[in-house]
Length: 150
Image (cartoon, rainbow, N blue to C red; front, side, top):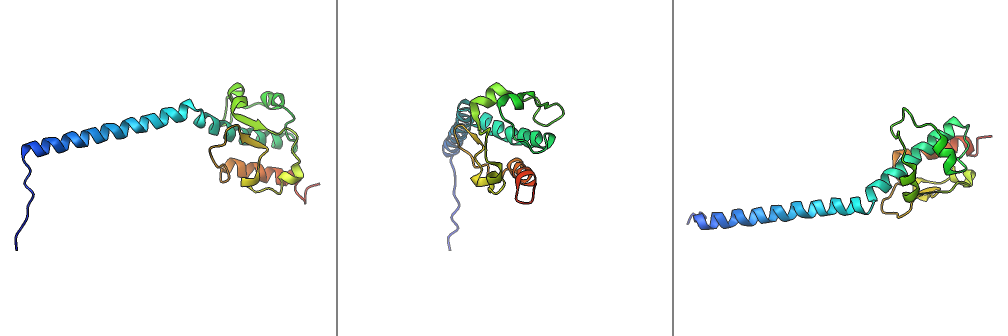
């Protein structure tokens, strides 16, 4: 039986190192391009803004006995100090988030997270169906406007 051992010449080792270096540079460049593309398209800002609005509206409802905000002004006047989302950039948020200020809350109270559309991104690119902030908002809506609420 013959024992085959690969013998590399210095030229082959150098060539392999150059190929690996080029592959690494390409991978890093592509990763940076993806991050910059997401940032420039506002995807991360939009996703953050939607999540912030889930929390702000939830807190607004709890502070106002289950009332849903009627306008952006209602939300802007709601204090955010001391919350994880403080401060809220409402100018940026308005560019990225659509809020239905007159939803049928009895219907919303029966919706699952994937069905919920009262707060949504302008350009949907992410499924918020399992977002804990949305789940908490729907629990709050159900508590105030579900079948057992008065």
